[in-house]
Structure formats: structure tokens, C-alpha cells
Image 1 (cartoon, rainbow, N blue to C red):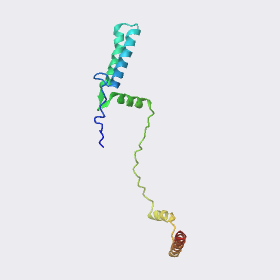
Image 2 (tube, rainbow, N blue to C red):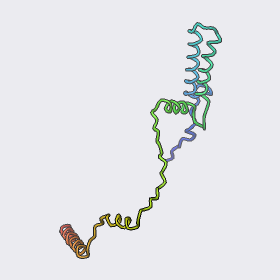
Image 3 (tube, rainbow, N blue to C red):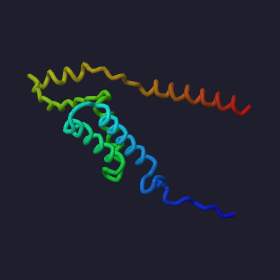
Image 4 (cartoon, rainbow, N blue to C red):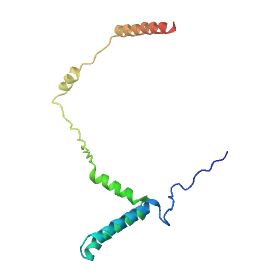
Length: 146
């Protein structure tokens, strides 16, 4: 049985003439807000245009403008997240150069080295440890074989 695989899934359907649904909503929203400002605000025409032109430009940018082949709404969303989200500042401490300290005498260095305690295991203690580990290992293997 053959199935048709959809192609060109990145391209949205043109529903309202040459516009997609999103583009139509952006343009209609910008036009609606502009019309409300035009009809309800009782100021001279020049002041209305100062308010309306940025709204129309923003709605057209949302509908048609792309930044790096991504819709402009993604840029606006990223800008809001950047400005209003909390920021994490990381301070990178510059590494200090190690200081070389000369000892007063070589004998002092030898004394400091001897003061570091390192446990030593004699040969007889080492044999006892290996023997006890072998016994425990054989006990566990015998229990698992039963």
C-alpha cells in the first residue's frame, strides 16, 4: 500500500488571497488598532499619524519581515525574554600565577616532607589482606552455586 508523504510542510497555506492566516491577523490587528486611534482620539491629523505609522509598520513587519529566514515575531519574543527575564552573570576569576617560595634551608624541606604521614603496609599485612579477600570471595562463590 502506498502512502502520500506531505511535501513543502514549511510553507503555510494562503487562505486570504496572497496572505496566510497569521499574516492576515497581523495586518487586520494593526489596521483595527489604527482605525480605533483614527476615529476615537480627538487630536489633529499630524499627531494621529505619529501614533498610527509605527503601529502599521510594526504590524507589517510581523506579517512580512524575516530575520535570518525566521519570522519577525521570533525576534520580538526573544527581545522580550531578554529584557524581562532574570539574567545570570558569571564572573570568571583570573588564575593567579603560582608563587615560588624558597626555603630557608634544604633541611627544612626535608623535615616538612618527613612530617607528611603515609601509611605503609608491610609484606605480612599485605599477605593477610589478600588471603582474607580470597576466602571471602570463595565463600560468596560457593553460596551462589547452590
